[in-house]
Image 1 (cartoon, rainbow, N blue to C red):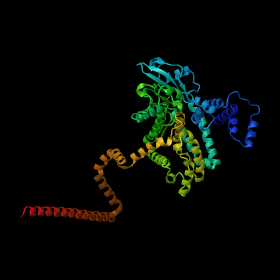
Image 2: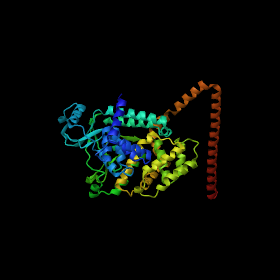
Image 3: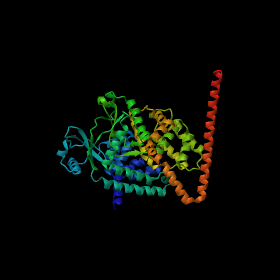
Image 4: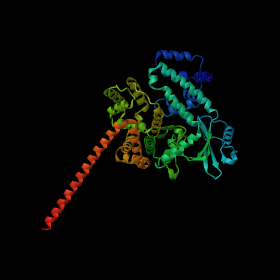
Length: 520
């Protein structure tokens, strides 16, 4: 019943705000335009289309708000008025009452607000889909930000996820393309990340890890958590002061180098992905600020760590090789990597896949970012991948989303930014560190504690293994092993005696030469 009622709410919201009319307006075939005219009968809307879409997403809840946040960064893929309205979803979601926020904080820590803080701003400074933020001051005078989880979020999210799971089942059942996209696995990934975001202690732990990772980079700041004031519903962190990255005019007026800021954003993203395998996966403009303080001037300020992406060493190596192959226009290598990874069937012809990838990517090189739409590239790659039954990897969905966010930010900051040229040196340097002596030395240092423990145990382990083999394999195996050991011993003895004889001969020759030179 909850599923049916939620579906009815979604359908009613779509009808009330005219989202069906928005969808049909983009379809040019005559039958769709006839259907649009029929569905418009008796309906009129006062608000513009962008406002209607934003209000509908807000009404539908956090999952739909997050969808709108992603769309707001892609102004090249949608009309400007719609993108401008969706940008308001980033920090203008209607807040819940201040009295309720106070009650939630006191319940989380079991103490009155006056005992926790010297001051607490009742009005939130930011209100997002999952939580809202209040500024406060601790008893010792430190300024902090208090993040409070919206009440009743779990039930709403579970209802929406149940609906998404059912839709995923229908897609897999009725669409071959849908099965290739693995929608049920994608929904499962989304489910995991959303439930992680509902646990604010997990978000605080993500922030602490990211702060350690970024400590030596000097490009981004992450707030410090006050662990004695962190719970699953409320967390307290260092207050960060900066200008939202979307306010370009303010940043330029303060003297920020916008082009450098755009390049730094790309460096931060690729460092988190390929060096650490731990990246901020919710990088819309509402979560990114820029510091104007003299000691940290021009640095990024990262906020909201509820959604963090992780990659394994295998994922990182595979992605880095793909990126470098793209940058070097080595499309054959791209095709070989896809086949070797199992993304496409093993019987796929390398030359056919190579030709298809070249046709998609080649037109986009040597052009500035303002002339390139990564969204269009991805759509063309998707169309091409149908022919080769490429399987979309669910663990990379967050990375794809974040890459689109990064492109959106880069496009807003510096339309002339060459994303490829900025990323290529970083990836090549990273790959050089993964092979050769630096990588070997790094791996040996990593494994040294295990070696130090294992080496003294080797004689005992060998003795135990021989005894077990004797019990299992019988005398024949043991006699064969003894023969091999004796043969090896004779060989080693021969080598040692040969080396000793050679050394003795050299010594005798030297003594003879000395004897003759002395005139004897």
